[in-house]
Image (cartoon, rainbow, N blue to C red):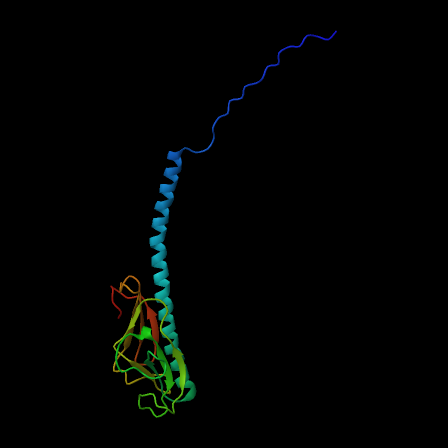
Amino acid sequence: MAPPLRPVRVARHRWRATGFTVIELMVVVALGALLITLADASMVYMVQSNRVATQAAQLANSLREARAEAKKRGLPVAVCLSSDGTRCDTRGSDWAEGWITYVDTDGDGSLDSDESVVRKQGALTGPGAAVSEARQVAFSRDGFGLNLGGPVVWTLSDASGSTTVSRCVSLSVVGMIAESAPSEGACP
């Protein structure tokens, strides 16, 4: 004879909810949004600052290349404001539109049909300005500035014209080219 059957006890399991509450998730999302907002402002400044520094380097390198070309060829070499890359502009002061470097074989300060263009620099990338009073600068065969009458300064800035995001490129009479940050909000 078989033993009598006993009732089996079924264990009751209590399921406990795990995870985050809605309030905890909202606090984390709010903190994340705050951090992104703070980082975004810094990121925008960094991008603008790097863009202006790159543009200043492009201009300074073109000037250095023109100076070296003048010394190499033993002829005057000029860099002039040019929006189309084929002729020197007689109006305007924003070098961000582009410039050309050419060998001024006759030394008359103008690009003639028989003179060779060494370099064409198109418009600078991104918004901004590269302003100078000079529309053209030239280097003698010795690398000195020709007919400058004093130092030439370009002020490069972002689209807002803010002095916090700007750079200066200067050319001295003796042909020295320098890049710098503006001091007290203005280029020297």
